[in-house]
Length: 367
Picture (cartoon, rainbow, N blue to C red):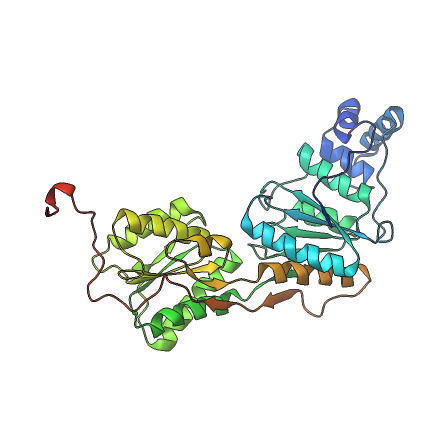
């Protein structure tokens, strides 16, 4: 059973209080607590005296045997349907393994972020205080400081569907994004479309680049020319996808079908098409990616590539259990297969291209 509330912090002064008492920064005080050697002797003495004077409770380094029935799951959000699907998979696998899961949310941080932020350091301190067997991270990426902290404390961890390429030795689980991009594009080609646009996510993300590469590969295999103007990048949200759709519709020869690399972005595509009175699928076919609940609720229901998020979460939990027992996976990257889910948003191409502009009400014929 997942526990969604973190335990109360250990009583006593925080590391920030110790750092202020010793006249140093929080990262410097953290280095002394964690036994790092890159601290001047005089600075180490001041911090140590402050620790003893204030009665700071030093968290012991993780040993892997203090709480074998507990694991942590850190999500980027507790509200998104993606996180909900991952949580369901982790919880089901944890129940089978006789484990409990502590669930928490972490703010999005860049790869160069440090651990000097109070909430971030406190979260990691609590993790060691709990003595969890290991951690699952469903975040876009971890910072270099977070990787170093985990390695220093010898805590087993697995990344779930990371957006950016992790270090070579880090274990991660995700979906077969390239194959999903191929599958989505081949579906549109089989319907007879040749003018197929794509709205990809952020540049340099693993999933976005792989899905885009699958799109390009499918076009090349079918002998269909890739049109650079049909390739647009959005910010993985509805607003940016809506703007990119308007740009595609403004082309002299707009596409007749769109492969949208995330269901959330597909909702923005639907909004733009409605604003331009372009009917789905009669005048524009749309394929998404993820198969979130929103895909079924859309009107018309969205044809999409199913990413097995629950299965990804369950696989990550099982890998983590093996790692806590001293095993090492044969490979650091595990990918689960994707498949196309056909619904009502795709059809053969129209006889005429979609209208470019919303007609002025004054120009519409009256009955």
